[in-house]
Image 1 (tube, rainbow, N blue to C red):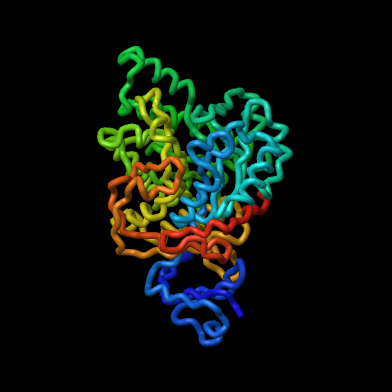
Image 2: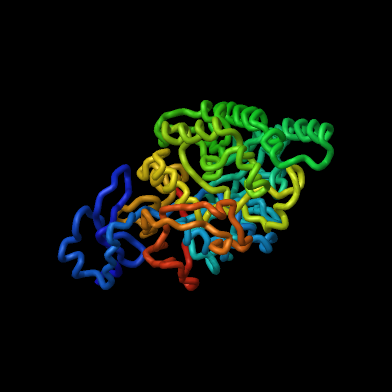
Length: 449
């Protein structure tokens, strides 16, 4: 007997949408088809669930989260944030290394993998972080278990800035892995900060944040990194692109033909700098949210293939840490619980198609990082699946937030696509608002470059 049959579902997968069924046995998908399930498949399944036309999608793969574990767990940890993830349809995540202490050694990565195996309800993986003095660790790391190297070219939470030219050359030239960058030029940011402090004093309003962490800081850094990647043949991935000028730097080639790829975050696709007036520091992010023209360029870049994937940069802070101004308030916000509903909202508005949302949040991350048997609804793949009820309006409130920080910049926003069920490795870990806390995700595995 097989375990579960999901049928009468609108399956959105590999560029098409069709009513069909998926059969699950153990951790894996064993049958996928259009129309009604054949009688023999239905007869073999213990549990049969009629989805009544709800959407069935591959699980979202988020390549950029900050789950704050270890050392910053007053904000969040692997348990709380993985619960928020599955409630939002995110079945796999890649966590960033700017923790306390930072994840900059092979032993530190191993420690996080062990801890995640004990507490994470979603599938997990951890970047190793670059510093000015750990290139030997980066060269020796096992990249079948690690998605890549995170390189901060501008300081952010954790201050892991790498600014020594010889170190940068060695990372781009010698490390046999994808290098994912936070791309802002630190010298430009410092000059801007000094300028506005001289003009306004130390209490700089949050609306100046995109002028301090300016478009020039992003463009200069990204162009420089791309030039270096071409020089050394580095597999470069530019995280959270935020400007129209950067979008134009990227190729429209198919993802599999690219040496240099780009990511955009949900908040840069949703908000503009006009939102500082009403949301204040709740939308203070690094890189900063910029103009409506930048947002439109990012949306267009996602549609035309210059931008390859969508992620969250989920970065929880306590609301008390978000108090202050452009200089003092923490940058970042929790988004992992609502990223898929927000993207589907944009699809409802005609900004994207639902098929494109699935491509950029599910298929493309799996291809870009060469993840083993995830990101698609295919026979023989892990059964990471999300059931979404469309046309189900609800208003987001802080009380809904499962992240330990307990708030969201989306509070008060009406959305219309609701995650109803999430399967991780064939097991229903979220259904009707209830999380199976006994479930455990699996470590992601990667094919070599």
